[in-house]
Length: 233
Image (cartoon, rainbow, N blue to C red; front, side, top):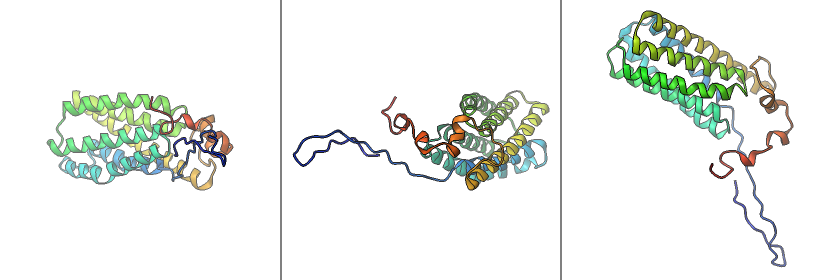
């Protein structure tokens, strides 16, 4: 983006200032960030259901650290660059939460509960409710990912605080549901990007639908008031 500058004509008379806003197109980072949720939800869910031995807890933590966390944080940064604040914030929260969870699993005893982790997960779940409200005005697919993510963290937080096999298994089942919803949302978004039109329903609202079918002028309307262009609020 260039700063406003005053121009002078051939007679030295000052003319109106001109500002130019330059957009750099990038590929959608949403499939990358959402697909990283699939192994995270699946592996953690299977661990809590007993399908993975408790002795491999630290291995699960290293898988989160080596695969899920970096991909989601990269996707978060790219989402902000693509002017998608909700996706960037959501993927950043997911990535940070998996990072903190993995570090807690590494530091603690396998199978042991942590009250500190429980309080942390409850706070993250409550924070994601704000994103659910915002995402619901755009696409219902990513909004459902946020819903399952918030529920997963809240239930897991309650288990860390209160214990109980029921809460542990409920968190695992919701985590597996998160993996399924994330897989469908990523597939629908990827097909949409390749085909240039909606093939699988993703619940686009009116304004979000214009991203594919609306005129170019409408998509850029009001861009001068967006973050990164406007003055700080």
